[in-house]
Length: 332
Image (cartoon, rainbow, N blue to C red):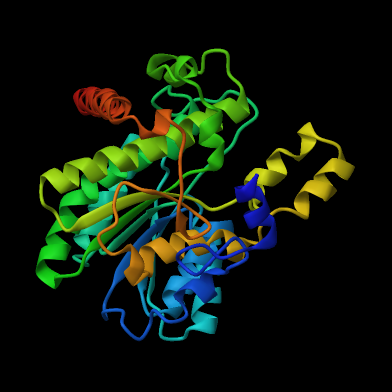
């Protein structure tokens, strides 16, 4: 109840920011101490929170690489960013996160640019009311929101570690999750059933993918600590934001209820605030394996906190992806 009241009132937490804070506000004082030449890679940067994150980080002098499925949309975002920040460097690369082969090509294209990689923001997300499958015959929401980002992170992790060593700047990885992850109970989180879309429900599938994003962040954070790598990984809940994903839920409720609920939603700029805060704030230096809401460390569900569950998911995912990639190579 206290958390709800704090959210509605926009009361600031220990970070000095709260639910009403915008991405520009939380990064306003960052430019003076940010190292030059930072590079951030953002997935899903063509609309909503991703586009706002790209805009604000570019405004703070960060080189932006946008991974996008629709390059025409990405070009419009780049044009808008460069109108506001003429010196901004924005690079566009094509990626379909639901396809392992596409993720591989994207990583090869990015690495060929020979750029540093300081910040990786796994932001892209889809919601589908209907059961769909990826090219690898995996349920689309899980394939896009979680599996694609898992492979992307794995393929770029050494680059981030190398960059942190060369530049002496801590690397930061951020998984965009959701408070809806807490709706998932243990009996509803079976890896095989999720892949197959068994008893499919769009909201449940979305929640499962967002739980997986947090578990992924916690396990990679553990592995990075064990490697003594100067790279952190955290998960964030942006808030319930007026984006395309919310609009896709609209048919499930009446227009009047949607109107009332929309008044409690965050703006896109408020939604991007937590991602931008964790990406740039000096207060998050060295913080890893945590879950942030409204620019403050927060509690996630008990299941999302289980180290054994995170390790089990990582093992299952790693085995699945590399099996599928091996099969794809043999079929070429």
